[in-house]
Each structure stands twice: as structure tokens, then as C-alpha cells.
Image 1 (cartoon, helix red, strand yellow):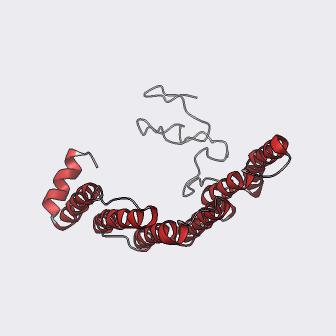
Image 2 (tube, rainbow, N blue to C red):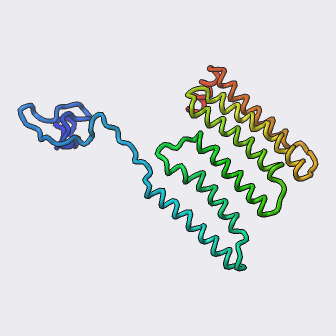
Image 3 (cartoon, rainbow, N blue to C red):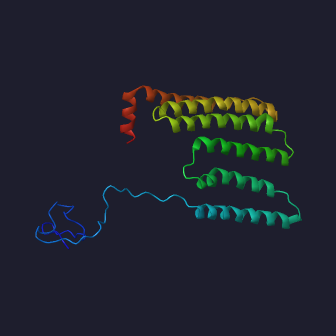
Length: 230
């Protein structure tokens, strides 16, 4: 059927034209009792990830695992580099696929788990290659990055305000981390100090300070929002 005023095509359940608000039927005519095509008060919700999908993702991770295993075993009839590939796949699964098994994965919990998996993987690489850089370099750097990222994730997850302060402070913390990284590189790998860390330190400090300034100055923040169409 069509609207008598504007001619738009209507569904059988339409009582008023959505375009011109004209009554569809004559008051003396009885309209069929048909469920409306757009239920009132009901917002469609996206379906959650099912266990079947999570199982499919697990199978997709098992495929490269088996391929790497047989490829390594066929080369010289012994396992050599398969552990490195398996560790990388496990880290990827923990970071991207493991949260799919939960209805509401909490990033405050999964973020430390991700860094724990990364630290264990680096420990295995250090052990498998006979290195001595894990305790003096990899563990402190991974732990420092984990503390900064976990702090940012926790604050943004539980606080509804102050995002500019949080991200600004986090960026400045990463700038200070550059000094620690260069210091640990010099100690662990016996290289000369050249001061490369000062360049990212200055850049990240300026960026973080700019975000904090925008958080303090409302006029400047609103101006940037208009300029960047936020």
C-alpha cells in the first residue's frame, strides 16, 4: 500500500506515514493485526561470540602449530626452532584469542596476562639461545612497559574523566623509559653511551605535556576539538 498524500510505499503494519505523518487508513477501515516490523522499545543487540567460534579460532591456531612441528622435525629429525614458533603462537593466542572465551573480558586482568606471556616467551628465547640478557635487560624493560600500560588501562577503564591527563602522563612515562632502555642496553650488551634516548624523551615529553595542557585549558581543548572535528 501507499500513502495517499506523498505516495511513499508503506508496510502493512504502518498506521502513520513515516514521511508526512498522514494517517494511513480511513478510521472506518479495520487494519490487520500484524506484528510491527520495527518493535518499539527493543534495541537489537549484537550476538556474543559463541563457543563454536572460539573453537574455530583454536583450530586455526593449531594448524600453523602442526605445520611448524612437522617442518622442523622433517628437516633434521629433531626439534630445533619449533619452540620459538610455538611460543610466538601461544603469545598471540593469549593476547587475541583467549579473551574471546569470556562474555565480558576485563582488560585490567588480561593486560597483565599478556605481558606475563611476553616475559615468559622472552625467558624461553634467552634460555634456548644460551643468552644472558633476560634478567638484565628483557625483564626490567618488559616490567616497566607493563606497569605503564597497566596503569593507563586501569585508569581509563575505571575513570570516566581525565583521559587527557592519563594519556599525557603515560606518554611522558614512556619518554622517561627511553633513558632506562639505553642504560640497560649499555650495561647488558657493553656498548658505548651515545645519548639516542634524549631524542624520544624530548619528543614524548612535549607530546604528553601538550595533552595535559589541553586537559587543563578548556578553551584550547575546545579549539582543538573544532579544528580536528572531534
